[in-house]
Amino acid sequence: MQSQTASKISIESSDYIKIRDLIYKNSGMFFPENKKYFLVPKFQKRIEALELSSFMDYYSLLQSPTESKEEWSKLFDEITVNETFFFRDQPQLEAFESHVLIPLIEERKKQNKTIRIWSAACSTGEEAYTIAIILLANLKLNASRFDIRILASDISNRTLALAKEGVYNARSVQYVPDKYLDKYFTAYDNKFKINDSVKQLVTFTNANLMNKNQYAHLPSQDIIFCRNVLIYFNDTVRREVVKNLHNKLDSSGYLFTGYSESLHNISNDFKIIFFNRSKAYKKD
Image 1: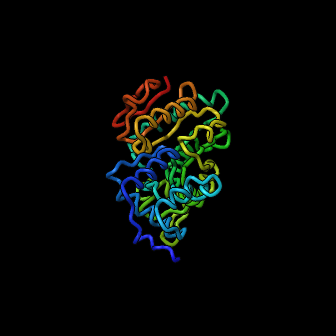
Image 2: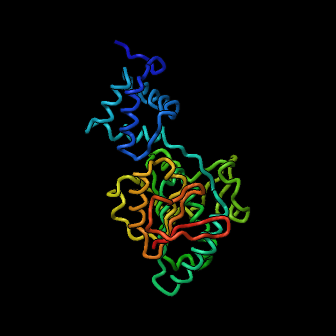
Image 3: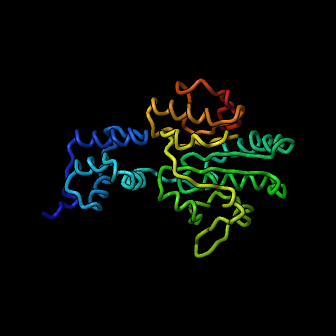
């Protein structure tokens, strides 16, 4: 019998909750009832692509130990929101550069010259490459003398593929200062390709922040950016994720969260540091 098209498949609230809760279990992302309008079309798209007949068929597939891994990757591609751009939240980046990065560079000049930064939930790479550009701009000719490793992780393979390609449209680079746009990008056909001098500093990997085993091997990080991610989690998952990030920070490391994100009632393991128009959390 020919499968129904996804547009004809209905979903009961109880079935929606089952799949919604399965997403929560596997990713930590929690979607309340009022987000049904957002999730259901994503489910329908995958059901149509797989030529399934019902939402419960899809639910069963997501639970399959042999068939679910690839499908989870594709579903995460659908449900993660990837709106980002270079030099996002300029006041925070200025604080990062002036009050955290420059003192770190001066300190490491006298020591082992290693710098470790993690861009968690990096999406299509703009944040990680922004960090790399700021590093290069401050190190200047000394960059080759440092061991710089910027890790960029995300749960979506599709966004990671775009990040590795490093080609962006005009909207993505609209806030890049001209001096950096000219030096670190190559423009062609209304596109902007990040230069190799920047790309070589960044390593991209798939990682679910809920699964600490996926990044247990990482060395201690000097700085972690986890911006505009915690808003997708409930407090239980936020506490677990922040605890894991805390454990991955160097003894005096910094965590940068999104502008509207707070660790109030989430963690007491950080000292909040206020800058002009911005803040960060220092490992306490």
